[in-house]
Length: 417
Image (cartoon, rainbow, N blue to C red; front, side, top):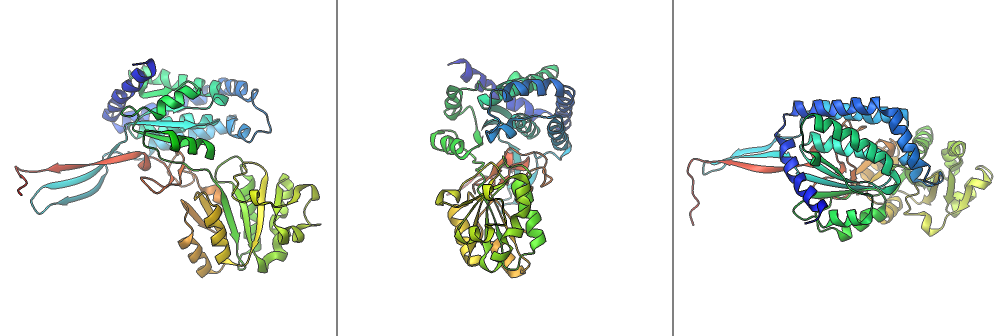
């Protein structure tokens, strides 16, 4: 048995130790780590700079990799929020007494050891540890090599606090940032209970196709917003601008705008604000003709098939004119990654139809898709946004990273026949 396998075995024992802590103890440890991270922000930014120096600034992952004082404060704020949330463990999900007199309770329990494989996002190191620890689970973290210095510095802070509280080192394991580590995690049957990939579609596909350990997918975000003929132009301008430009490198960022053909004349006004952020637009024939002369020529190009169904993660966006709600629904069904989808419409029937028929983890009416986030849903932080339908869907916060078991209390009953 190699060293990694031995450590993963110890992680199973560590998860049992965490689960036996009181929720108050787990919360106090999270708050202590948050305070240490806040105090070390200058040193963490310096380590993060070492990572940033190795990445091209034009790489869409550069923004995700960056730590700043404000981002560290935001992460620390999420940690404190999670610490103060009610425990997700021991919740009675169902209770009944069978006809034979056996009392049954279905209660929430830790998942055990959770493996998270992610790319250049050092905030995930803290988010994942905090959520797993609060939910009574150990975590095995495999960050990308791009964030090696940042992740190592964050893990050191976590370990220092855990050691001070005499908790096992394997409560959190940061795997080496190489391919071999990924392979070991994907084959750690019986040692890791579930693996959650967080990153590009390529990463998610690789984990799903190669893992022998159960996988919960946190899908890439190919995000659409449909502007209906009944849409309010001011709302549309603000929602589209926010969904596209708030942070272009995140999975809830807008990729494609669908516009009802009866509102074709409003397309220039609908996207006018995007020019201030130098958003490049790939427009189909009708949208292109409407935008020509009204949107900067250097930022406007004819759309090709590949511009639809693409997660840009950049200041880029596509536009397509559709005949109405039915064609918008067909387009979304064909190209969506089932992450977040939105409609802008004043017609309540159209909104209700869209909300009912669109198959996605989160569906919005007259609001920005930028809200798809555990913190914004007032769930604390999140492991990721699950786009699958088994176990969890949408923001994977505390409740979603637990399992359950049945507890049966009898009085000598035996089964006959």
